[in-house]
Amino acid sequence: MYAPTKEAAHRALIDFAPQAGRGYAAGRNYDHGPDGRQNVSQLSPWIRIRLLPEWEVVRTVLETHSAAAASKFIDEVCWRTYWKGWLQLRPSVWDAYRADLAQLLEASREDAAYLRAVEGRTGIECFDGWADELVTHNYLHNHARMWYASIWIHTLKLPWQLGADWFLRHLLDGDPASNTLSWRWVAGLHTLGKTYLARADNICKYTGNRFPVSEGLANQPLDLQEDAPRPATRKLMPSEPIPSDLRLGLLVTEEDLSAHEWLRPQAAFAATAAYFPKDSYQTLRVAPRVVDFRQQALSNVTSREVFEQPRQLLDWAVQHQLQGIATVKATTGHWPGILAKLQAALAEKGIKLFTVRHWWDEALFPHATHGFFRFKKAIPNALEELARNQAAE
Image (cartoon, rainbow, N blue to C red; front, side, top):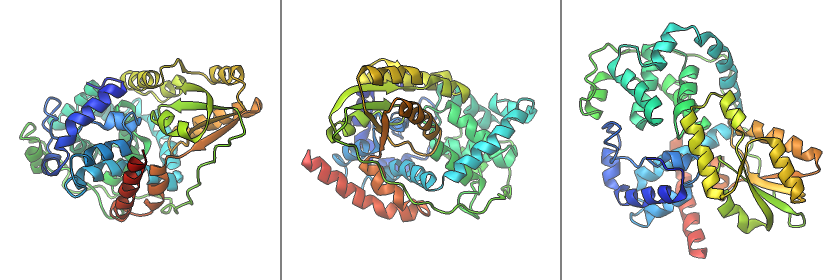
């Protein structure tokens, strides 16, 4: 169902928008299976790559509902922004996760319990069903993700890092921040003293007894501890101004497929390119369907050949006699490292890379200092800014 086009994404948003009010709030927690997703938006794979940026989703919903009526849906959209902002302010959490994962992945190759989990052979019917759904559809209902993660950690007693990696590689909407921090939350590491424990009665209720859950699930969460102290919040570095006195190119990546829309008014660009470092995704062992979806979406939205190697991008920049390139400022995850390598390669040719953050992120990221409910207080200001921008258009 996830066509990698702006048209398909926009049509899905328009179709869902009338349902984003109080009915969504009442029914969103029910997981009716792959063929019964009408109670949720299913927009997240397009939102992840900003084929549908958050501000467009919220603005469209507010054309049909008041902010109060659609508050639960708007909160769900803003959770993604919160996770991104939280991790952007604490990148050491991501670094620690990746360091732990590197060691755990090597051992997992011969770990029978891990292999049974990812292959859906644990004997826990609901868990195995979601494992199959994940690799077949590259999507899971949000409630199922929480149950799955809880069973993985607290019942099967597998490392949360391996579960987070398995999700990130297979989910069409897999995002380093929301995925990593959601797994940490279930494990009791994000909010100290709070874990999420899957219960049989809860699963039965919210799946409509699709999974009766006769197997014994953990009735006590694991008490996981971290050696490192809680990370301090770092200062959010501002975006770089785009100079007006250079011959500039615009670089669009799958991190934000709306960039060509909101960056073009900020500068005159002599050329536009699309960049998708496929080798990086293969190194990360991202599922082929996820890779294809994002790469095709990038190609469709830019109507250009997608460069896969830094050399191709360098040749393009030289061909167009560029002095600078503007692109989206990457959030904590895989992309800062990719852009750092690209920046170094461009610098050898005397070409400057400028990275810019959209006003939505610029306004909301600084508020991700504590929990979501403190962050939530900043959402009304963002909605007011959204209304002002729409009026200006």
